[in-house]
Image 1 (cartoon, rainbow, N blue to C red):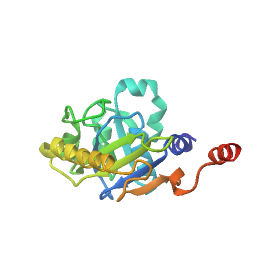
Image 2 (image 1 turned 90 degrees about the vertical axis):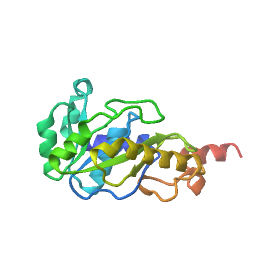
Image 3 (image 1 turned 90 degrees about the horizontal axis):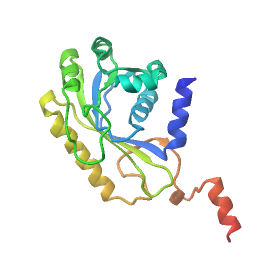
Image 4 (image 1 turned 180 degrees about the horizontal axis):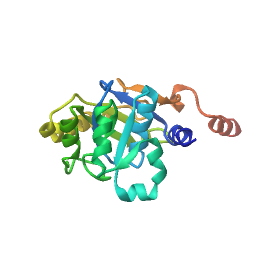
Length: 208
């Protein structure tokens, strides 16, 4: 029930979800940028689509507000043993290395947790640029750019590099079209694709 609710929320709340890069097929510590309320749900949806075991570290404050998210893979940010066990048994473990939701822009800080977990478990450490942006459609769009595995000390530079590439792609694109080179995982055609929704068609008919 909770899984269906979250997936329906992603599909109804976002225009679509697109990914680029090589998605790890097994154990990995994902280190994404964190600038949007949607970020955890978006990553959870990607894992569901791939059938990939998944968990995400959340602050104790967030878990006290949303305790039900434990049922779909959330664990406390200080629960290192469950996180380590998950990363050793083939899960994607999501650790937001900035440690909290940050404003859009450059990476301001990187905490040590993601690098430590990858080193302790032997899992690949993957920087992920993640942007949820409102462009030329009524709903926001989610884009994820998966980088290559890196060593812990290289994570800040690697994550910033992926973000710079994604931001440049967004700035140089037609805002009414999805980014070129990205695979659509969820979402339907855009208004410009020639498939306006029922409400748009109805309003157009009334105003002819």
